Image 1 (cartoon, each protein chain N blue to C red):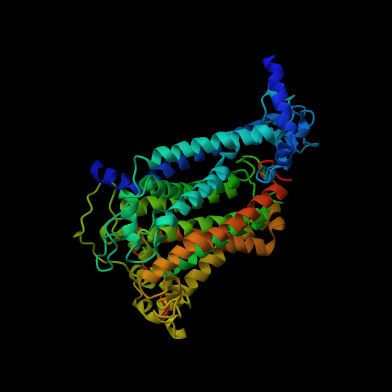
Image 2 (cartoon, each protein chain N blue to C red):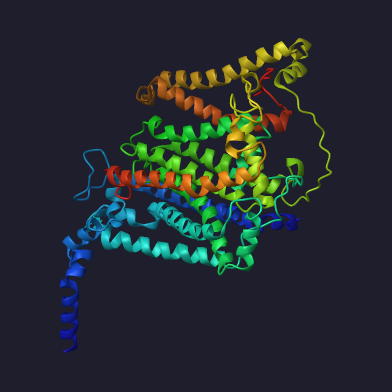
Length: 258
Length: 324
């Protein structure tokens, strides 16, 4: 009796126009449905319908690429919430950190999670690269995807670095001062670099000035770091991620070279 | 003695470094374990009949055909992605989220005093993942350590797939089939990048002076400035004072650097040519040159470290515009 009713309810749901319009396939565990589960889903269709069995093992892929992407999503999610409260100017930036600490609901966990996920992502990107190197997965036909991966690695480091300044405390301020001081020494484009002086480059028109929006790490630098960190670089990273995943699907990923 | 190490390691921002070291060691072990296991399988498989449905053809052994234990030989080589892979991804995501939660609740992200451009901390350090670059400043001028070498690292990584012409080891772990590639990668990543981060974090104190782990950071320690340039070093050991002039320094520097890259690239080329190594034909002159350039650029760092620590040599080439 009960089973009958359950079957009937199941049928009503799966045969309804609403269900069919969303899922487009039935419940049965058939080969066709397994393939459709991947093909019919915009998020899952980046997977191939089949993978080699040995590639499923943790000892093969270390799950590092997936973990890195998950951390990227965590960072986007927590980042949006941090953005709700944060003002990128010299008066408010540090106060907002204290605001997170004492006033914002779950503000401490939110900021902690964003920071630790960022550090962890730097590590997992390195390990993902190491794994790809060790399995020789950059070899033809997957050369270009390795190049895209290197660009994503650079973007990860730069995202982490621009985020460092935003707290506007001593730690971030001096870390970014040390980091951007390197730009002074850029050959031709920095005022302390080789041939910079000869080309008329000064502290007020060199590449460091362009990065900081000034000759010191001040309010403009904070705003620039904020815009790079929250808009320009995540968007760039998402574009390259799309290419990275697309090429994984087309040239081979977990499935081995295609 | 342990007090100082613990004080540095337990800084919230340095916890990732400790975690990274453990992870790097673990995965280093894991990848070599997998590589040696596959190499053993391949050697043993030489005489075995090929499993059915595998990709092995003739003498070419596809190691993946042999990677499964006997009892799994009959099973299909491929499985459907749903649910097998998607399920694993889901479990993995939950595990990482749990780890992140447990890390985020007890350990607070660091927040120091408000920024003050008049109050310079000593030492001032870059974020930990850039400490390798900051530590290179000891051995190279900022335009090399901070601009040129990072660019070369990025470009060097990008050219790897285009200069590694070895078709073997594509999609599985192996050491025996590509020892040079793996050794170079691990030297660059493990020895240079990771070790420099560890030195930058744990061994660089006030004034960026070197302190052994556990040694108290004494900001008043006096270090005698005894560094000399390459031409002065040669003048001292040969007794020819003429070498100490600026012109001699310039010429000697140029000759040394050209010889370093020139001989470093040419000698292995001639040797491989003499051995009639097939790799030299597959590489071609351009690829070989690129490999040689990036390899010797990378090796310049440890060489400069040794020269500095053992012979106190500061610059190899001194010009009015830049020094190397």
